[in-house]
Amino acid sequence: MFLFGISNKKNNTIESIPTTISSKLSIAIENRSKTLGTGDLRIAVKVPINEEINEWIALNLVDFFSEISLLWGLVIDGSDENDILNIEIGNGFPSGVEYRWSIDKTKVPIRCNGPTYIEYTLNWIEKELNNSELFPKTSEKSFPKTYITQVKQLYTKLYRVFAIIYSHHFNTLERMGAVAHLNTCFKHFMFFSFEFELLKNEEMECINEIITELRLKFNEPLKKDESPK
Image (cartoon, rainbow, N blue to C red; front, top):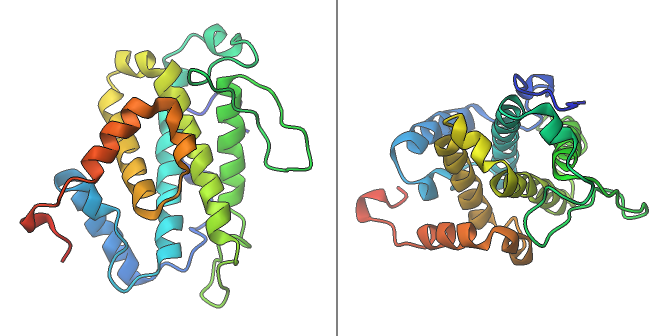
């Protein structure tokens, strides 16, 4: 468990990437990394030619999980411990929202505060990334029929972590000089989510001003020299 101490947490407890990533996809990942630094994110999020969409979504999920874990670790490092631990149950969420933790519809959702919800989320996603039934480790085994539905749930939970950070921990990251990194990570995450329709519109309403701006940028026409090859 993270237990409010994940500043050095990477995906080092995630077993070898549980997808059938080919050598061609590895090359595509390397090229994507270059694009993230110099080009248009709308191109970077597209599935590489001749590669499989489920693999691409899984790979990026691992990347986003790693980035958000590091960002949350920075929040913990830059916050007074009491400020995190003493947030009242039901608080610490975007305005007008209270997330309750549940991944099992047969159980009553747990009320908690924002930081605890993030801890539940990161622990659960880490567990799911090691789930070989959801993310096959060999090419002999196919992704399950419910793959997209389950993956959308994972992306939704990650989105909520971003929303909590923007709503209640932005100033902490600003003091630490990490806002530019937060914004880049979130822009990448949202462009990817727009591209593959991973989030429900009503889910994004809690930080609507940010989402509206990003959606406008995502929908801008590509320049001729930026169009996918």
